[in-house]
Amino acid sequence: MKTSVDHQVAVLMQGSEYGDPQIKEAMTQELRERLLEAQAEGRPLRVYCGYDATKPDLHLGHTVTMRKLRQFQEFGHEVTFLIGDFTTRVGDPSDKDSLRPQLSEEEIEANARTYAEQAFKVLDPERTQVRYNSEWLSKLNLADAIKLAGNFTVQQFLVRDNFHQRIERGDPVWLHEFLYALLQGYDAVALHTDVQIGGREQLFSLMAGRKLQEAFGQRPQVCITFPILVGTDGHNRMSKSMGNYIGITEPPEDMYGKVMSLPDEAMSNYFRLVTRWSPERVEQMEADLEEGRLHPMEAKKQLAWEIVDCFHGSEAADAAARHFETVHQNRELPEDMPEFVISEPTAIPDLLVAAGMCKSKSEGRRLVQQKGVSIDGKLVESVDYVVVPGDMVLQVGKRRFVHLVSSESDSR
Image (cartoon, one colour):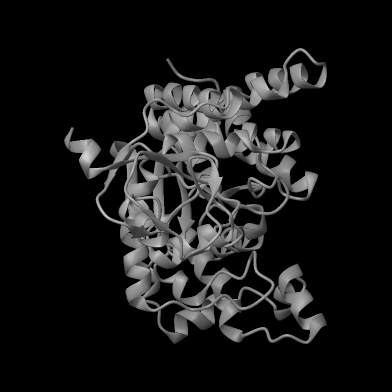
């Protein structure tokens, strides 16, 4: 049974934000018109979102646009997951107030290899086309670049907030940064796309795609943009460098616990941007919270369960909920702690690595220095602390536990 166009528009535009109500109204109307035409012609819309391969791991903030791509898939539309291996060489200046560092081709290739695999935690791999924009951008010559640049003025770029702020401070704006919007805009031409999805800070580049499509005789795409997902601090953009992120490959207990640590005021941001909930459910939950029919703790539990279910499944979500209740609400140790055998006195950084609690000794030392490591409830104060074999509980942060056992007790 076909889904009504009005329902599709309500779901697909949920959470969208442009910073200008007139642009939102225009894009909503264009989406409705495009959906009606596609339905009449019996064809799917061509939809894409581009992802520059700047980091090897994705966090929940990256999945905002992926979740929207998945909704397009569920309505039967054609989705392209575009890896911007070529545009990564330039660096997207949209959300930066300084020059983005340029990566080597080896770094870009390594990051790109992990992207699709991680994206399929959200997208349907059977209905996803993965493309790389080097397929067409690497073939452009200088004459092509001049032709693209001829569609824009310098003034259009200089009024962008991030460039304007840097100029006001006397910081440099590099010429190659202007090329990014041209290259991203040409992606829309190469894919002959109907709809492009992106972050609100990328609106200039998405609109550049519309202009270039018109210049190449194509119908301009519908642009759907979304606000940033705030991190676990509830204020700043989710970022690994700020430590306020939720990684999509994190263990279920960590993911659940991090969601439960969100400030209450951040919940609506998550309801609309990273869940599979319908607009009706989101509106009902917000109304229930506002009128006191739903306690924020209960709403947060529903949110945490939903997010873990998205990436790990319902059984893992149930287990993570039980773990949170046991460890954090009842202040008990979890029953299902993994065990690690300690056979000889071991320095705490080495033990943390060996027990799988961190990836390197330097990270282990940082955890200790940040007062994030305890043994049997007692804080480990020194990076030089040596753990002797015995029966004890090693804890990192609020949610990670390992039951340490000596080789003697293990053999018994």
